[in-house]
Image (cartoon, rainbow, N blue to C red; front, top):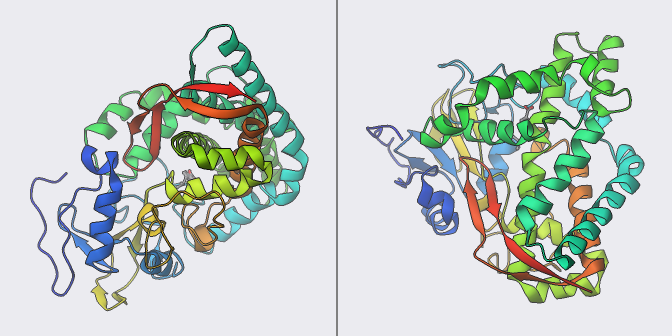
Length: 407
Ligand code: QZP
């Protein structure tokens, strides 16, 4: 947090909160309510930024990519004023036309057709993981739904699909923790995560090189796009880096949060256990209810107006995706976790041209994990208080001791 606050412009409701403080990140919902209730656009003095927490204003910002740009960074740091924490992503921290080109390549690789090809492997992996957990539990071991399930599954299937070898995959967790903290301020949390930055970044960049990727993964397909002249050989590792940045921590938190929602709403788990076809809607509802990615920023490209508030050029606007997902102006009974809700239009994958390009794979992972669980487990019993892992951007979990009651 900055030591001094920045004066509010005229005519904007002021909400004096620190969205990256422990207390905010621990129970964001009450802060989100304050932000939403103050208006569609607010001023957050501690960082001198505008904020949107209502569904209507989050949607408006994310769907006007010409006014609210990504090229100046999608975190708090304004890349027009300070150097990026790492070389800019070619897709995330880019605007059309360069974004369009990168996006087309990733969208082709992460297509519905790809999902058809990987589905049986992803499902079999989920089933065998649940089976192994039940066996370990029967042998007297305690199971942690975060450490033993939510972290294990994406860390197996996704790097396998990209074509990254199995040694050193824990670097992906450290890297994820770092980059998602880096979208926030340079607080203690970021400093701690960034202590290990050099070896972790070196490992990540090494695994973006063609010789360290298998011949049958998503990574190789990026390099083939370079062979075809769609991108340069210097751009290829940067696009592989996007897989390794965006594909692991996000789904780990998505699955961990879904398990948390289901464990703490046994009636809802019961519905899923009775009807496995609820796996996909249940995962979707947990994304709405406990959105993995809590915040994203844009930067104004010109003086503009947003829902009655004037915004100057080159100013940061934070969108509270998770707050939009619980906005009672948009959702009936938003604070109810309901696996039978069909929460189309939630903001957990963003919206507009930057909406998550990997969402079909993320949804596949959620679906097959919840399906495997629903088949083999009749109840998830919480054995202790689940612990959160605070991160500046990610709604992450550290641990969740459980007993899986076999069906
Ligand atoms: C992270 C990249 C939730 C998203 C912001 C995750 C994410 C997406 C892309 C990249 C990193 O391209 O490096």
